[in-house]
Amino acid sequence: MTYYLVAKVEFHDPDWWDDYMRNVTPLVYKHGGKFLARTENYEPIAGENKANVCAIVEWPDKQNFFDFRDDPDFKPWQQNRLGGGSTNAVLISAEDDLDKLL
Image (cartoon, rainbow, N blue to C red; front, side, top):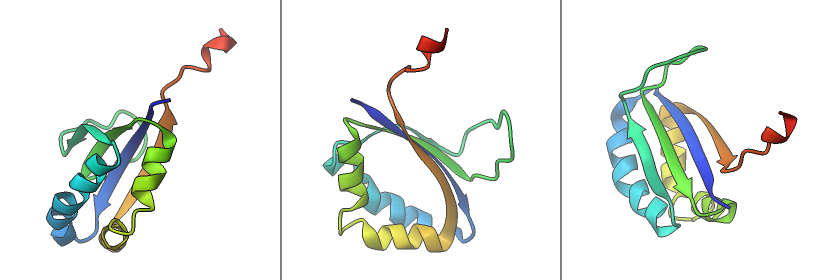
């Protein structure tokens, strides 16, 4: 089943971002991920939002995402992101399982 990672990143120190994207993008592709959106151009609709960047990444299945997240080549870049910003992210299954409530 397809999964979507939806992430918002707020920079505390923006110096890490360009290197992060240059190095992490090939790792996303390596594990089957596909960027559907990654942009500074977004409009907050509800709630507090201080993100500098928002992204949506499509994964063929949940395991592909976890393989990416656990890839040893990703770990140093993950540490850079954690040190240079705050991230809010969710992994969402591509299903409408709440339609049964209608």
